[in-house]
Length: 220
Ligand code: HEC
Ligand code: HEC
Image (cartoon, rainbow, N blue to C red; front, side, top):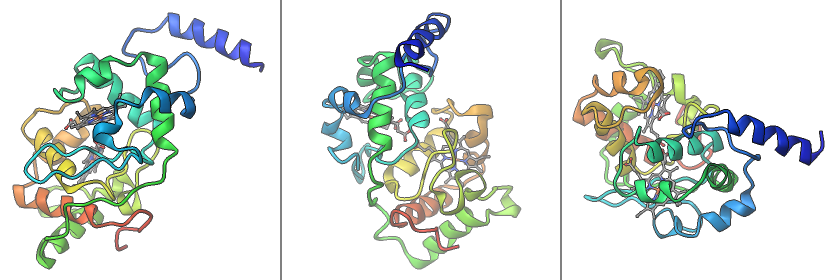
């Protein structure tokens, strides 16, 4: 199909859809995405690494995350389905096409290493590894890898990579689900799990995943 027919089709599709839709007019373009992402680098950094901020609000790594997942989160921030005061104004600045473009831009970057798990004790890491790879049947916690993939590197657009993500960010998200402050996940999949985790469990699995170097298989 020619590019013109494709974008015509995109227009037709786009016109029939509500504002919250993840479908964009044209496929995301990383080059246009780079231009639309100039304001993002202040927090997410030029290489998409984000930053772990102990005691503060950590900025997640976006580099190498699935484009469909990134786009969904930006639509969710924009519509208020996912609430965060830092992200709301920046997501709101982007139209549907720019969301697809920045998502394409960050998804093609190399995954960067994470921090925040350096001080964890062996005992804490062992608990983190257990939850990540095997789960805990006594507490009805399914292993993270059963959805986030072996090594927690992510599966498709629905299950984001959590390995090599900053401990501060992972922990903030798990607490947000546990406390009912994040609820944009399909079928409450994460809410149900986070509510069964203790604060120590959250610290353990966050440290474990932050310690996984990009490309490692999570100690399987
Ligand atoms: C002032 C700092 C700041 C700026 C600037 C910023 N972000 Fe964020 N971003 C954050 C924080 C903090 C979070 C985590 C929010 C939360 O805890 O829910 C986040 C989360 C995200 C997420 C969700 C990641 C995930 O794994 O779920 C995406 C996608 C994102 N930002 C994209 C962008 C884009 C694109 C821009 C530029 C248009 C941008 N951000 C600008 C601070 C920022
Ligand atoms: C039943 C499937 C399932 C299991 C098991 C699961 N998750 Fe998730 N997780 C999801 C889905 C789906 C999302 C994306 C939610 C969304 O679309 O906003 C997610 C998102 C996340 C996020 C947010 C990532 C980001 O970039 O914002 C973190 C952190 C996370 N999960 C950690 C875990 C941990 C740790 C475990 C194990 C204790 C786990 N998950 C087990 C389905 C699962």
